[in-house]
Length: 262
Image 1 (tube, helix red, strand yellow):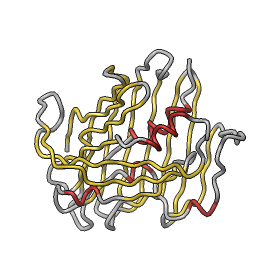
Image 2 (image 1 turned 45 degrees about the vertical axis):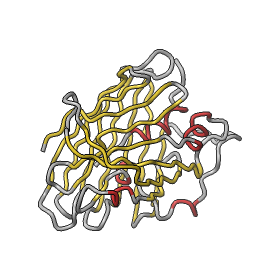
Image 3 (image 1 turned 90 degrees about the horizontal axis):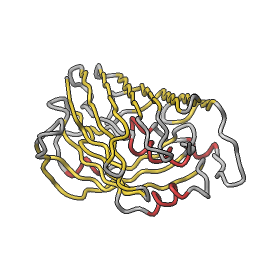
């Protein structure tokens, strides 16, 4: 079975989530997604968001069916928690656990004021000669990737796409920049939402922790077709990904909203 290491940048981009104004009423909701690769469903994912107007928690769980030697079957869970009182979610804790081929992998990151306080990766990632070293100076002004893909806004408009994020996953440091592409309408009755959406283009820039020999990292960095459609999470003020699409050498990787409660 092939290693999952080359697909971690895809997982980071595909593991997306949700948004709310500071003094709003408490919010609790669940979004369900189907992930497919090359038109074949490979995973089901649930995102649970709770916010009391000051602090948030986000829990993600995924069951991966696998796809031959390309994607191993297994499970994954992630938790993000921190402050929701400002204009954006600010993570104070990020945990990720995966299990595939009978092997466990975990990440624990603690943040303090958008600075990395500590992080532990089990088992450790070997610092091979082709891995770009993570510098302490690169770990300030960062967020986790779940909190970074949470959007707050007063309306579903192009301003939602005006996002730049410095992300640290515990393994990699990379930057994400989004830009408005167009207004669109979701019409499929097979999805969890029908109505207006905003399409954003996403640019991925690796900084450190990645492997210079990774074809996936190079492909993502060169790609101009990483797309996210955002939809309102009902009347909460949160905006969640309705669809995520990126073209890979193995076909289109797609995540589509299939259900929304709360």
